[in-house]
Length: 221
Ligand SMILES: [Fe+2]
Ligand SMILES: [Fe+2]
Image 1 (cartoon, protein in one colour):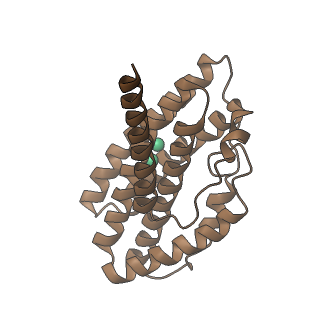
Image 2 (cartoon, helix red, strand yellow; image 1 turned 135 degrees about the vertical axis):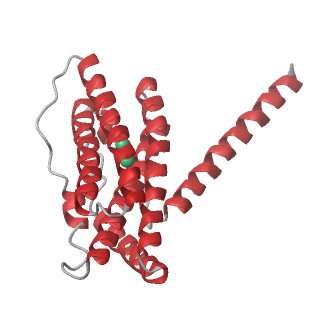
């Protein structure tokens, strides 16, 4: 019995260590400079209707962004193909969130302002070549995916509602893939060295914005 207890304790410790390592790796992989204060989840939990509403519109905006990439840069065939697939995936995420809202007896509310995204998109100066414009758009999209992924991870690990925890765990994986894809396209179409410099600068800027956030029941708030 004692041996069994010792064994399960060891397993639990290993599991905790693996979760911790996975968290560190994800953080490292995403490159974010400032992690969200985990207390943000406590704020979210008090108002699930609000977070689901805001989240539904995040998925709608991700869909709209993918469509706009097709319209703006049609000659980049590989990008157009990836964005076509992304439109389908993001709208399916919207549907999933919408269904969660319906299941809980609510009706989708009006769109919420995303202060985080509005602030973020002030970083790169307007103008420049078409490729530069595209690279900037790709980097913004990569970062929004990365931060969303980090927020979904926090929800999946800390929210008491088991069903929602599982829901966010699955979405976290999708958004991590989107982050990699957007950053990959920026590096492919832009000058690699210059893109990496811009990416680091954008990450620094984002950390500054984040200092004032993590206090609202929205995905990026
Ligand atoms: Fe999504
Ligand atoms: Fe996404």
